[in-house]
Image 1 (spheres, helix red, strand yellow):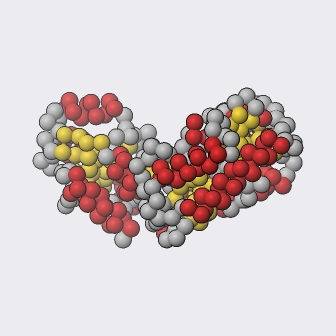
Image 2: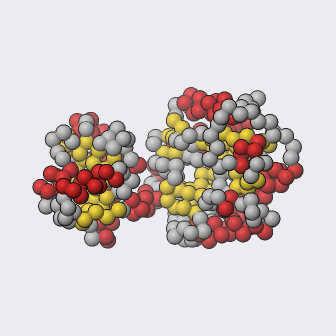
Image 3: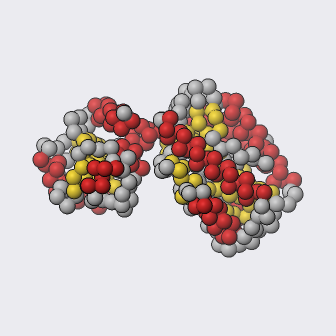
Length: 352
């Protein structure tokens, strides 16, 4: 029933946008969108084609796809070219929605063969469909968060390795030992490097402060968490942490279904500015949060430019931060679930 409901929503999108078909390709690996609508994972190439009366998965290992995917009609890519399939179905000059997160050369080649074909990028529409999580998706993310919490607890309660690349490997090792995968490159940044949001561990030692940002993948779904640990007393850093903890508490008070994501982002920005962090607030660098699911960055986006409305069963991060370039950075990030009333924090490890 889950697959049927997802395809139903896809066909409703087709009617709304007056599309004759939807094409979801993937090449080097299964894209989140292809996996979501087929529940099939494979190194590409894979092509999922949906019309109002047909659904087809064209893939390399079509026999395995018939067993593992939710698509009944699976055929070999060796026997079926996409352009030929579209011709046979009378779609060569029709309007087709396509997942734009693909190689541009594929689009160029397809348009060269079928010059009358009309392609419309629907990547945002597909992300909108995925942004409302089903119960089982929420449980997968919850389990990923539980593993993240346990790893943070073990890290804090142990004699912490004070070398960024060694601590990164230690976190990754704990993820693997839990029978999971990391969902993005684990970030460990110490001392002044913690003020660099895209820092890559470089075998640097630290002694005052360390920022951790990592994700655990459980049954294809991911967590995303950041914590900052003070290893030495520092009043400036402690004040910043306390300010962010207070902000998180206030976000608990205002978040509810139907609120505009941009209003939440403005609220957080103004609160930090009121506390004197106008020039050092995260809002000068990145958003307040983002959706998580099959990928670590999904809809909704919580920023001052966002057009998203936060709805029940959306899962997203809250990651306000304060950065002092060249000194240190503090980021506290939880993965949260929007409930019928307010939010539930799926990340449970304390901020302090």
